[in-house]
Amino acid sequence: MGRPSKGKRDAIMAKPAMPLAQVIRANAEASGYTNGDYITMIVAEALGMPEYAPKPDKPAQQATQLPLETEAHSAAA
Image (cartoon, rainbow, N blue to C red):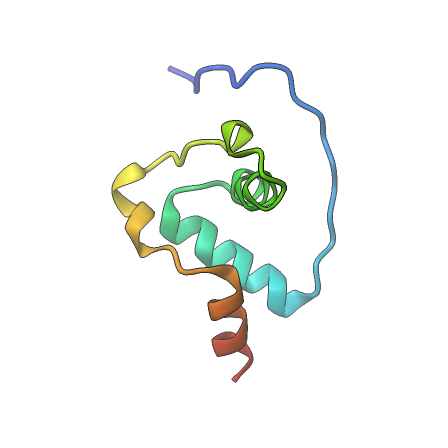
C-alpha cells in the first residue's frame, strides 16, 4: 500500500552547502520526515504558514528533533 496523496504539489530544488545538507538529513531522519518534507516543514513554520507543514512519517520520533540552528552550530564545532 502506497502513501496517501498529499494533494497538489510543486517541485522546488535547493542545493545547500554540505554541512547544512548533513544537518538537514540527520534531522529529517531523526524526526521521521523525508528530506523534502523536513525542509517544507521548516519553511512553512518560518513563513507563519504551519497549516502547510507536512506531518512526519514516524511521529514517535518527532521529539528527537532539535532546532536547526542548534544542530548547525554544534555540527560545525
